[in-house]
Image 1 (tube, rainbow, N blue to C red):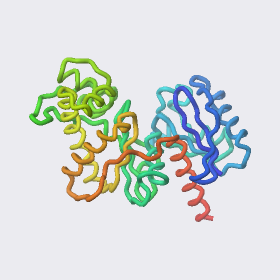
Image 2 (image 1 turned 90 degrees about the horizontal axis):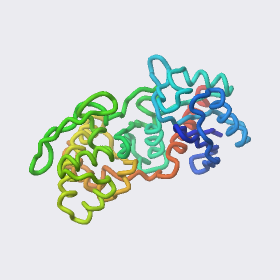
Image 3 (image 1 turned 120 degrees about the vertical axis):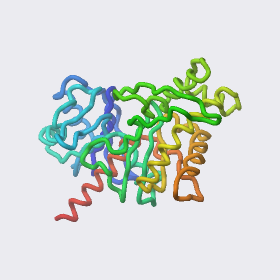
Image 4 (image 1 turned 90 degrees about the vertical axis):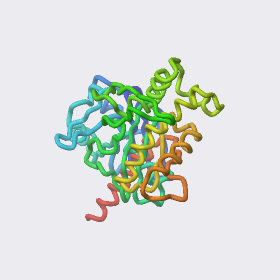
Length: 308
């Protein structure tokens, strides 16, 4: 049995997993953000509530583990930030602990129980509050020891001229400290900045998408530029990784029309030709962090059993 946690700055979701088809969530618990002992007690209480003897504990976190130092980068949970979190939790809980980024767990969930089933290489993209991603190859995270692999939203690669006809675009500043990141212009807030730049009007991303699907001209122009900017870098990801499926999660993925349009644009720009959709909506929309954590945990248990 695997104990899974999906940990955010507000709430900790826990579950016991006896198989990928038998993941039993617990009631949410508030995240203690400034007291590490209290943080550990919340995890212990969830483990005790499950009641069975776990093989390991797996955490899906909104942060990164530095592969060189083993220290965590979890800005919204200060008590768990900038410390050797895995070692500390293993000592406190008396169990093996695995930790992965939430986007990584989303990719594992899609590989094990979602749109990525049957595919060797799965790149899971996030389009929502941010632009993120993760890569799974043969059931293994490419960054199994931590790090930033899969973060295609952060690099100064956003086009400064896009759309048909082309329009000049600024290099928007990104929260990571760079300029010209996809995260800054292709996230939900980025789409809103793009629309305001093109039309001078402030509008929520959901309304832009709704107007686009209704045929409104200004929204159509914004989405033409948006899809042009996003599809090129995503096509490069396909060519570099050899992924054969891209499940998309995040708030913007709720628009099936957007995913269909992005799929068509990406498939037109890659070297390999697919007679089927490549960019698809993620299927694990309910607790993908917990499901992905379970996939990671069961793989760990299986590998450990083989080694004995």
